[in-house]
Image 1: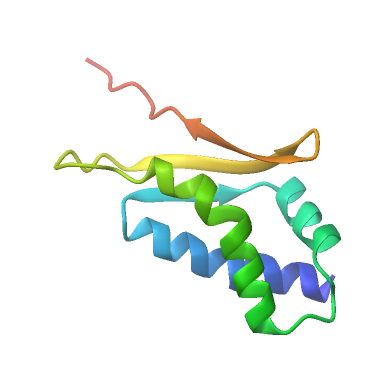
Image 2 (image 1 turned 135 degrees about the vertical axis):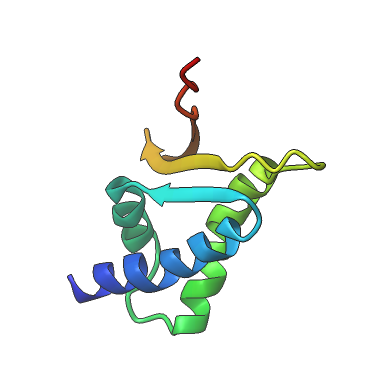
Length: 97
C-alpha cells in the first residue's frame, strides 16, 4: 500500500505536473497503478522507477501534446485495458451558447 501511494503521489504526480506545463491534463486510473506495480520489481531504486514510468507512459502521451498556437488544454485519462496501457482523450464539456 505504501508503494502504491508513492507511485501515485510521487511518480505519477510529477509526470502530471510536467505535462500540465505543456498543456495536457493527465489523470491516472487505478488500473494503471496496479499494472505498473505488477510490471516492475518492487525493490527497484527510485531512478529505475522514474525511467520505467517514463518509458511506459511518455511515448503514449507525447503525441497528445498541443501543437501550434491554439493552446487548448487536453484532458487525458490513462488506464489499462486488456493488458495494454491506453490513453483516452476526455472531450471538453461543450460550451453553452
